[in-house]
Length: 279
Figure 1: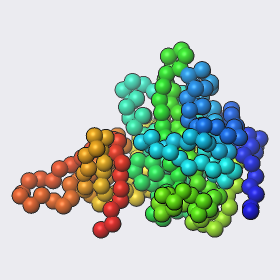
Figure 2: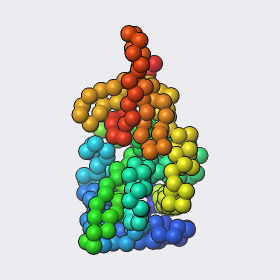
Figure 3: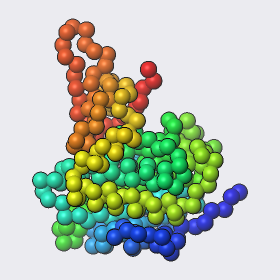
């Protein structure tokens, strides 16, 4: 069995060139959930940019309360505490775009380190081919002094073997190694991600979401596909994913078109479970 270099704050910091992200790293060998730990630390007042990283998770979480498969020693599981004084009139835009920016930063990091072509399934699933290689969970809260914070959690399937996945994931999930044939130095990948995400956040702060949205749309494989959206109330909607709107919402136009002359229904989704349909 291939033995991988352990995750190491020293290895990460040796090439880190960020202003804040990753300057404090809390490394755990095993943890229930990096997001849970990061949220607790944020409530206690830990500084902006702190990263909680673990070799394995026992209760890793994804979007929509799904469990995240988190075996030891082969992947990357981490969460970042973000404290940014976003003006009230931009707060909704910030909270909408943060998960999408995180997905964009993760996709660009994987591509820079491995040359693999990573796509994003709206809102923040990372795909190699048609299989999921990473996912993101964002949470918000208020600290001890009533300062707002966000925690972004990322799980990346890096050096594992797809045969080790639970049977229900083998057809839909993959790893970077499975798709590229290359083992990846995890400390380098994490360092690259911290750089890319901080750059996205700084871009948003200085110029808003225009450039971030443009880069996201170029990577989003959902656009142009027929999709089935399961809404928060359980209802389903089938349509053509037309675009990602400037507020980060997914615009879907009803398909098939109505046959009685009515205009097609249009959905503007901020939260939904999306399945790409084969046509």
